[in-house]
Length: 439
Image (cartoon, rainbow, N blue to C red; front, side, top):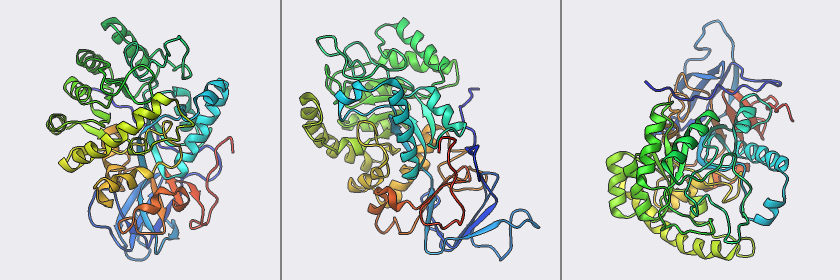
C-alpha cells in the first residue's frame, strides 16, 4: 500500500490561531455541488469542522457545556477554501530580462509575496508545478510566512530542446536555473531524476510531453517526454509514495501520449482532439485547463516575439477545444498557471470556466472538490464536511447568481485556513487575523 503526503493542519505559530467558534446565518456552498444551505451553521474546533449544515437549536454544540464564540455571518456566503492546481510561485515570465537580473534571494522573497497574495485571494492550497523548492513549502507549514499549503513538483522535466530547456540557440538561458536539472533524455536520466525529486520532497512529478508556448526552441505540437518515459516514471513512483504524474501537454499527440502513459492530469490540454477526450474519459484523467493563462494574450512589448506569436495562435485553439472537452464531461480541476499569468488573482479561473460553458456551481466544484481529489487531499480539504480541515472563504455576494466578483481578491472578505483566521477585511469575526513570523 502506498503512502500519501498530507500537509499538516496549518496553525500559525504567532498570535491567535484556531479557536472554537460557531459561524451562523450564512448561505453555505459546501463544494459537493448540491443545493446551497440557507441560514447554515458551521462549528470549528481545533482547526477542523465538527458540525456543518442547517442551523441547530440555540446553544447546541458538538461538546455540551462548552461555549464557543459565535460569529454572525447573516447575508454572507461561505465556500470551501479554493485550490489552485497549477501555480509557479518562483516564476514570473512577463518581464524575463528583469527576472534574470534578480538575485536568488530576491526570487525567494517574491515567492513568499506571491504565496501570501494567493492566500488572500481565497486559495488555501496549491500545487506548485515547477521552480519552487521544499524550503518554501516547509516555511509556510512552520508559520514563517503566510501562504497556501503546497503540493510540490520542484522541477518540471523535458528532453533537451523541450519545454523546460530554456536555452537559446546561442547557449544563453532565458530563465533562472531550476532547483534540479530538468533535462531527461535517457532511461537512466529518468530514473536518477525521479529518485532525486522524491528525495528532495516532491509530492507530484511533472513531465512535459509536448513543447510549449513560452519555451524558445519548440512548439505545442512537438513531442517532448515520450510515452515510454512517462510509463517509466509512473513505474518508478509506484515503488515509492505513488506520487501522481502531471503532464504539461498542449498539442493533440502529446496529450494522448501522456494519457496512455498513465498520468493523473493533463495540464493545459489546449489542442485536445476528440480521440484525446475519449481517452481522458476512459482513463479518468483530470484536465487542468489553466484558462487564466490560455485565454490571456500578453502585451507584445513585455514578452519575446516567439512567445507572443504562439500565444495568439494557441489561445484561440484553447478557447475552442478546451470548451469541447469540458462539455464532454472530462474531469476538470482548475489551476491558473500563475507565474505565466499574474499571481494573486487566482479566482479569475472560475470566472473563465463559466465563460467557456460551466455553470457557477460547476466552476466552484472544479476549484474545490475536484482539485482536492486530483491532489489526493480530499480526505482533508476541498469540501466543507465534518472532520475536514476548516478551510473556508466568506464573501458578501451570491456567486451562483454572478460569479464575476470572485475574480477580484478584495471581494474575498474573509479566509480561514485550518481554522485560523488569516483575512478579515470587514471585521466580521471580531478578532485580528493571524500574522506570520515575518509580519
